Image 1 (tube, helix red, strand yellow):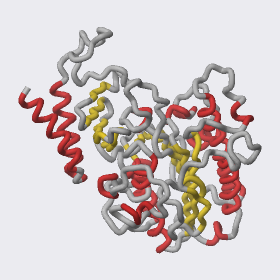
Image 2 (cartoon, one colour):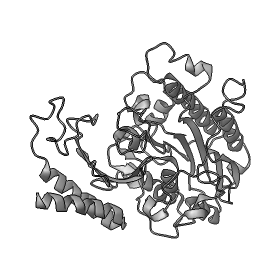
Image 3 (tube, one colour):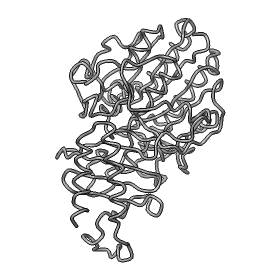
Length: 418
């Protein structure tokens, strides 16, 4: 096991891809994430599989979509969500433990209130409770700072040197409530930047990420440690009047950062445009750490993309969702150029991501809603809808997601008879 790397996973909650400088943001201060990006690979098209916390997290640690792991709602007050309702009970962490790896978890878990034995070191919590030890304004410590201190203590311990480890740092910010220590709030107050607390939290987490990177360097662990920075889902800021927060398939909710750095194993300074996502995380960890999962996974290892052995994993990306409150199932297929969102309530969406990357103009049925006279020059997109619906159906069929198959077949039948 001497040549097997360590893995450090740094996971903020609800962080938009466009909140980071190396992804094009021009006002957020993220020097340490920029530093991390320069030493590794920036994935420009990495997506969540289900844009809320618990289902996405259940996918990231199993490599399975939600219809298979069966965890589709945020859960609270349950010791172990996998045991409570999971279609599978084993995560990547048990597989690593069986092979002798040390597993450590710090921060937000949102898959249960207790450790349940998956982690040799557990300093986690499920969810809720705010971002401050004693509540905002109490003068107590910011939780991400405390978590960073804890994980650095582990990195400096003998345990981190004795055998390979996987360590997860699960930060709760920048998830609302949007708060951060004053030194980071002052960067954005009075600047006109909307939601300054959100971006202050992003800069705070950037600072803590830098501290973790520096600790790895100081302990002689950095060269053979894979650092993975990513988020479970994005943040919509309730931008659209019909949008129920993050429970949607729009880019601001499903597209998330993914930065991977491994000095000993990967060429630095890469930008990777392949369509990748949450179900690919566990296969990538298993590949890097040379362990087998006890079941077939939906995702694929991203290592061949980073080493140049492959230039893509798939032609399209598939997202599952359930609209909040009304609990309406949705399925989405996203290609490089187009996105089709099918909904059980028949409020479907089609977006041309080349001409309309902001997803402002839904061209699924341009004749029905044209109060702003936006659609007069648009053609009939029935052929594109059929093409994408067939792609969605094929993907859903391969995954055995029969809800997705049904949504696609309804649209195809409607287009056939129209």
